[in-house]
Structures are given as C-alpha cells and as structure tokens.
Length: 501
Image (cartoon, rainbow, N blue to C red; front, side):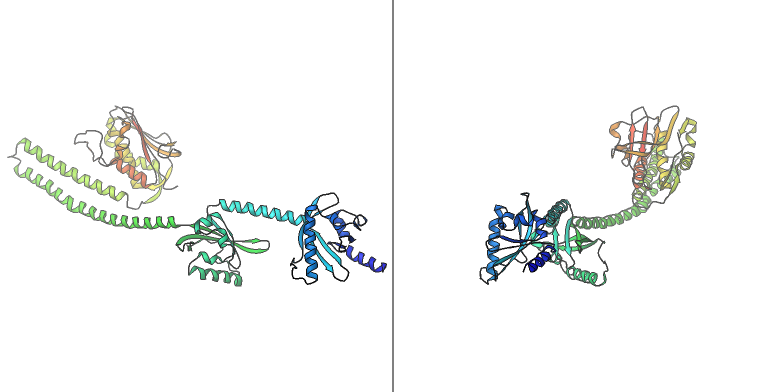
C-alpha cells in the first residue's frame, strides 16, 4: 500500500499543474510539488489543513458553491451547473499575497474524495490586461482618425468599427460587429466583395488589397453615397485580418459635378467669345475702315473747298477710326491671352531683354535712357513671345511716364515678401524706374483694361491696355504682380514667373 502511494506521489509530482486532494470536509490529503511552487507552502505545512488556508475569506463561499455544484453534477442532480473545464478564482499564497488561478475539481463518489487541479494564471492575466490596454489604446487612436476604419476577418465578418465609420454609415459599432461587411454595400458591390474574398482564399491574389478605389456605400437609412475605399492586410495572433479605410467623398463628387458643369458653361462661353471675336475682327472693323476711307476720299476730293476747320475734323475722324481699330485689336488680343496655350520653352532672360531693349529703346536714346541690369538674370521656363511683350510694356512705360533728364531703368531679380500671399519669394523679377510715380490708391486701377491715370495728347496716347496685358501674362505663368511707388519717386513693378516650378 505504501509503495502504491509512493508511486502515486511520484506521478503527481511530475504533473506541471498543481494538484491536491481533500475529503468532503476540506481537509487536505495530498499536495503535489507544483502546488507547493504555486502556493509557497511545503507539503507538511498544508497536509491536514483545511483548503480555506489557500483562499481569502471573500473567495471561500465561491469555492463552497463550486464544490456543491460539482457534487450535484457528479450525483446527477438537476441543479448541477456546467463549469466547463473549471473556474477562475483568487488564491492566497504563504506570504499572504493574492493571485489569480484556474481551478478544476471533481468528486470521487466512491469515497467522497475531492480532486483539485490548479494553475497559476498571473502571467496570463497580466498579458490579458496588457492586450486589453493595447486594444483600448488602438481603439482610442482609431476613434481619433478622421477616416472610417473597419476591420474584418477572412469571412468578411466585422470586428472593428471606429467612430468615424459610425458617423459615415449611421450605424453604432454594436450594430455591425459580428455581421458581414456586405451590409454596408449595395449590389453589385456585395457580390463583388464575395468574389474578391473567394478569389483571395483560392488563389492568394490580392486583387484589391493595397489599392484604393471608389465604390458606393449604403448608410443605415438606406441612402447610397460615393466613398473611397482602401484595403490593407494584417496578421493578428496568427489570423489574417483586413483593415478597410473609408472616406465619404459625397462633397468631392458634388464639387466635381459642379466643376464639370462650370467647364461646360465655360466652353459655351468661350465658343460665344470666339464668335464675338470673329464679329469684332470682321464686321466691326469693316465699317471703321469704311469711315476712315470715306474721310480720306472726302479730304482728297474736296480739300480745296473745305476750310481749315473742316480738314481738321476730317483728320480727327480718321485718327479716331484708327484708334478704335487698335482698341478692338487690343480687346481681341486680351481675350486670346487667357485661352490660347502657351508656347513653353527655356529662355535666357538676358538675351530676351537685350532683344526687347533693342526694339523698344532706339527712338528714346536721344533722351538719355540708361538701362541697368545689376547681375545676370536666370533662365526661366516661359512663353518667350509673351514674356518679351511683358518686358516691352514695362520698359516702354518706364520711359513714357518719366520726366527726368536721365531716365533710369533697372531690371533684376531679388528676394522679397509677396504682399498677395505674405510669403517670402526667392525669385522676384522687377523693373524699376525713376519716373513720375503712382499714388497708392491707384495701385490696383493701373492693371484694369482701358484705365489711364494721365491725360495725354494724341501723339503719345495709348490704349490703356499695356499693364492689363502684363498682369494677364504673369497670371498665365502662375505668377503675381504688384507695384511699389510714390509720386515723383519712381515705380518698381515686381512679378513672379512660376510656370516651371
């Protein structure tokens, strides 16, 4: 008998889980080596003691009820409960510290012996707390993301649904978790989703994973809306999961529709403008030429009978017809500036300004015009003919609106703050003069078409479109223009050209 008990003790001591035996009164009869490691007692310290030694007062009723339920189950009573493999309890070790354990007991009906198996689950509980904390942390992060985040498993079952997803679809997380993600889609996307998952199961082909696409979503109220969906794969505890990033693009789609509508209207408007341009260039200029020609014929045929005043008025008619034709040409050119494609190329501004100055300044050399370029200008990507016109207009104005005996024009590039954006620009071109200057209240007016600030005689009077063309050319090159000036202190026109950036 002693040999058998020794063999049994040897077997029990080899078991990794703690093992004990008690009688129905709770007196401990056996206590294996693993149990001593778990509770911190030696065998002789617990043999003969009541099992309550190992339990705090608060847990003893729970143990008693568990023992009663297991006993009832053993003897087939109707009130027995199914505890599966056992229950979790709080135990007490020799040092008086509590710790969590998993307990499973059974009763031998032949001799009323209670067999108990215990396992210290402190590490598992700590891990569960860490995982729970991590999950809560992740959920908190997910709920701060503006896009909807939905996690699903390989069967399409929803496991996660963040606050943004709730807002987008109108469902609470508890209403969708555990259900198939298809509930958030109308047909044909529901069937397509099944085929995507089936295809991935069968072939491993990641047809939509890692690729964003636009589909239609369905809200809780049944309303369909456009959304952008991105799907990525992840592995959680050895299981394949998918994370869907959802963005409601209803506003963007509405804006795209509005833009398309505006574009169509603009195309119609441009077509009408082209028709107007044709009429203006042919039908409007034709009577002007007729008036000018008839005035010329009248002067040639009746010059002898006309008095000096009559001849002056005929000359005036011819001048006004020519001026009107120039205004029409300027208006047509302005309309084309905003619609024609730019002939873009890399241009050396030094060569361009040399060419412009040669064509613009020869007649002004007798007036002592001095053109200064402090340092070499850079090459820029631009439409060369239009940028040539830009500099021609600015140089012409610098000479025209200048009463100084020595007219000075400086052309260069600098860094300065753009007053339109309040941003430091590192490549600002400028044309500076020592002319009559401009009052600050006219800084915007000078760029308006046909707007002139000065009274001029007919010999030098322009059409009032030069700076309007300059502004339009700068804007076509994605730049901005502004002026710095004071009366009698000259003017500095600053502009940027950003077509090549």
